[in-house]
Length: 468
Image (cartoon, rainbow, N blue to C red; front, side):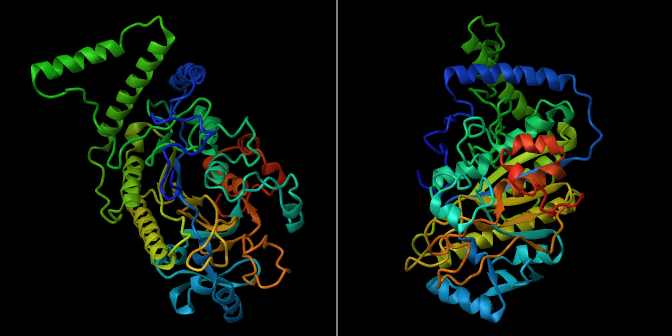
């Protein structure tokens, strides 16, 4: 499995298969069917909420994005240290766009020159940067890392393990959490507040993922342009109609065998969900301001589903989109510039699309990745790292700010407190803090946040980058 692409099977521990996120063991599948039936009964009795619609979009950068070249120092002495440490990977000052903001240690920072869209959103107050975010169990020091204390997550620098840790918020591989994603756990925590609807609160535009797999909820997976219609010889001939009618009759039959009934239930639910979504998407905007790249197509569909939230009866949604190619051990400078340019243009187009339908403050988009990369170079590219810089976007974001502590770019001496070697930064902000801050805005209570994020008790649970 190449870490450059969004994988269909993420790790050997993944209980997901190649079906629509539901191919588990027999016992696991039966349990899922039973709990889904229970959740449907709960949803049917739920009184529609008057809460305003809110959505969270996870934008995952598969392969481990070198975010050391996403946000960089612009002050002359700090930039000189940056260039000395990065060598062939260094970006000159002329290639760095100013952010017109300083972080908490007063360093002037900028963003990669290909990311003009993100720079513009930052200047508009609709985007913020978070410095040095990564998987942590508790605040960690260089001594903790060297002694491998309990604060240090397992299997650092592994693509599959760190993808799972980012998406599950289970850095200890705790069995109670590593089989569910924190996106799904958030949805399950507030599902009773969701208006009655037959559509899942979880939608993946990029295949299987850990982020949206819960105990009682699974994601719906439409195609890039929406949900394909269900067809089994479903044409205009009498033979086609007979085949389709016969198949639906098979699915709607009564079954004494639980596995047969489970298959029929899931198949019928998928068909109904696809029909419901396709009907709601009719008449939505074209959103031509979003680029027609793979990532742009995913975000265009998200924008359409957000616009259709009223007919769908949604008050909360959690989306997963992704792009790959960030495992830049080899030639990095040119390819990464193209990748970051697409990410920036797609994010800018998506936010503009949401603003055009007055939903810009209702949706928060955030980036995630396997890990950052080494601050120094291997000669042409960079290798696997740890803490990195991320982007959070939306009208509800307290934008035009850099949150967190930017690492000292000097790795020439042994005195850098965040450098575990080669500029593999010890994170100073945890994934749990990043996620919990958005969860509070999404509507989770403090107790629900503690339930969803197992390590948040060790950290400040609100980083302040979301408006109340």
